[in-house]
Length: 450
Ligand code: UD1
Ligand code: MG
Image 1: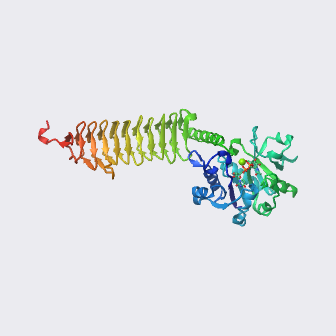
Image 2 (image 1 turned 180 degrees about the vertical axis):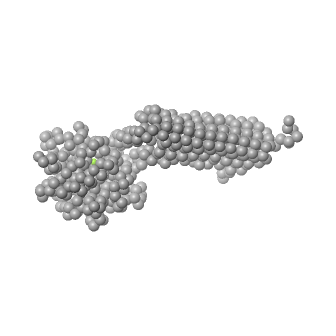
């Protein structure tokens, strides 16, 4: 049986108090709606249909072609929103799953259970429920003597007995497609909000003598919908805990999971240890047996095996096996530490490579530079790569020894095995094996050598 997914995301999200559409608020680096779209894509090949309204253009742009879109100009209720998808989906599938764009914690496994139950259900729909002592304004589930669902009662119109019910409507449903498309435009208008409630389909099915099934979510946090920034932080905490547990069970030591922030897009090798207050973000990949942190931010980086990163910030950089950085290092876009390379305190690199085994121990800046294997960059060395208009390249050969406080005025080349004296300002290329010193640096004649 073929499945289509409809994701409702037209609401304004007034309670976020934001100029940004609610479903575009980021949760661990991804917009809320991306979670719903990704889960939908895992369930069925057909891209989900996103019902958009408030901030439609921005949502469309953020989601791109991983979904199809229909616009609900006026938000006249969840039933009205689903109706908007009818033209697009009427002929597509036998089952329709309806979820929300603001429920990022729903898991693929739970939605699969819901769809499976509806496949077996002789009736027209199955809904997802949860039991929770805190009803959060959710609709209450009324069950009949046979265990089937009789109705969903919205909080605003519930009697005191109904309000005491702790089985709640998550707002996620799997429908028989033919039945849904036939009935969705027959939902009566509900007062006083003058909305068409999708929940009324339950009563309509029951009135026809049909069976409505419910699947109870194993974990109530799955139905945590985001309405306020408080909810956003709660959802982030749940998601972080899930991610952290997954990595610990996969063999990664998190010294303090409560202060470890790993985005869902990150991967980490086993026997790596993550120290407290570390943020691993974006497309970051970390190898095995590394020590990362404490107090570290890594965004979109590739880190090999047996590397160490202490109290540093790394962005779009690469660290090869056994290299190390920190404390207080900064790798910017295009920085690369070769195998076993060492970068100590207060270093910064941008668009530069430190070759295998090269060392840059203290207070240095490398921009647009290529440093050969085993070279030593003395304390305070700076590549002066910018002339105010353009950026220029510095090349330092293998085994070169750059004296403390050397200024390398790019473009410039220092040959393999060459040396510079402390405080040299290098304006011209230095041949391999030569020694240059002074301001501006002059190459020492070879007969002066001992
Ligand atoms: C709905 C359910 C309630 C359930 C709760 C769970 C109804 C009538 N009630 O209530 O039983 O417990 O969800 O969260 O369905 N939306 C649109 N267009 C609209 C209206 C809503 O796209 O015209 C979207 C919203 O963006 C949101 C979702 O549908 O993502 C839910 O709408 P909302 O108005 O928040 O419904 P609730 O009152 O929370
Ligand atoms: Mg809501």
